[in-house]
Image (cartoon, rainbow over all chains, first blue to last red; front, top):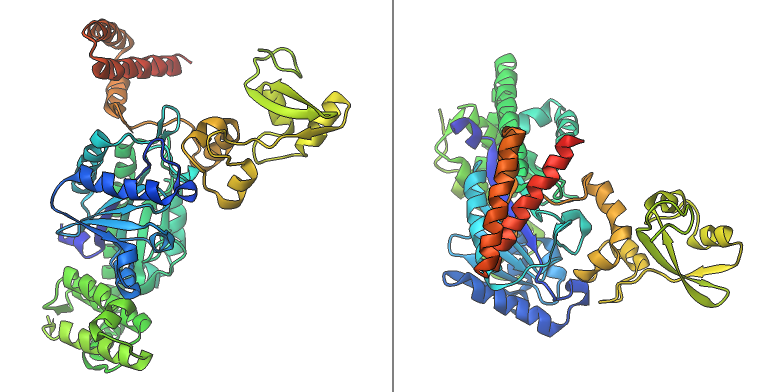
Length: 331
Length: 173
C-alpha cells in the first residue's frame, strides 16, 4: 500500500540464540568463540559471506553500523563476526552479547516475509547446533531481558507530522501499554534524527512470536495511517506555510555546498514529507533512505578514501545530496 | 521438605549459611522468604534475617553458579549471566527479575520441538470434550511413538499433551 510506504521505512526481526554447553560471551575463551563462528557458518550453507571484524578497518566497521547490519556492541567484542547474504537482507552477528543474533531487514512493512526468512534460517542452524533452552524460560540469553522467544521485532518509521504537532510523547505512552518501545534511528539512546523512529517489542517471554508480530504490525499500520492523516490535515490547514517550508528545504538541498549530518537529516525529512504530500516527485522513498545511509559520516570517509576534515566531509555530503536529488521536480 | 520457618508449606528455596562457623542448609517456602530477602528486593540483609530467626550471629554464602562461578553480586553489576546453567543454578534469584521485566515467567511460542502456539489457539476455540478427545488421541500416539523408539516425535507429542493439560487446568481455575 503506497500509504504505508511513505511512512514505514523498513521491517526488522532479530532472534537471539546461544549454543548449549558454551559459556556466554563474558566467560568465553578464544577457542569457543572460534567454534561458534565456524559451526554457524558451516550450518547455514552456501551463499553467505563471513566477515571477521578483526580483519576490517575501523571505517568499514562504522559503515556496517550505519547500515544497521551490526550493532555498536559487536565492535566491543574481541571475537565479533558477521555473516551476510548477497542481498544484505540477512545478517548474523556472532559473539555479540549472545553467541548468535540473526536478523532479517526488509523494506516497507513486511513482517510475515521477514519472519518466514528468519525462522527458516533459525531452523537450519538449530538442526546442526543445540541451542541453550529451558522449558520454563525458553531460549536462554546472556541478559534476562531477552529470554523466551529471544525475538525483537521492529519497524522504522518516518513520522514528521506527528513530531511537528508534538504528539510523539502521547504516541510513545500509548504504545508502551501494548508492550512496545520507541527509539531513535540508531537504537537505544539515540536521537530521532530526521524524524525517524524505531518501534519494537519490549517483552520477549510469555508472548508467542506470532502475538509479538501481530501487535507490532497492527500498531505500525495504525500509526502509519495516523501520520498520513495528520500530514494531510496540516497541509490542508496551513497550505502556504507548509509549501514554503518544504520548498525552502528543497532549495537548500539542491544548492547547498556544505551540509552537516544533522542538517541533512532534517532537510531529508522535509523532502520525504514533500514527496508524500505530492509536492515533489522524481525520487522514490527507497532512494531517499539510501541517500540517508550513504551520507552518514563513516560512509563519506570511505568514499573520500583518506583522512578528511569536517569541512571537506560536509562538502562531499552536500555534493552527494545534490547528485542524488538532481531528478527531483515540482509536481 | 517443609519450610524451616512456618513448618507448613513446602520449601522451594534453599540457602547455605554459616552459623557460628558451621555450614548449614536452610529451606524456606516462597511466602516466608518473600517476607525477608528474596532476590534483589532486599528488605534487610540476609545476615539480619537469618540472625533474627536463629537468634545467633550468621554469615551467608553468596549464591553462586556451580558451572561458571557467577555470583548474584556480579549479575547485579553487569546485568549479564555467565552461562546457560546460571538460569538453573540461580533460578530463584533470577525469577523475580524476569517477572519484573516481562510480567510473566513461562515461555510460549517456538521451542526446539516445534511451535505449540497454534495448538493453544486451537484449544481456545474448542469445547472441553473435544480437547479431552485430542489429549486421549495424543496419548495413544505417544505410546506408539515410544514403541517405535521414535523419541523425537514422542517429545513433540509429550509437549503437546503437557500444553493441553496445563491449559485445561488454567481454564478450570
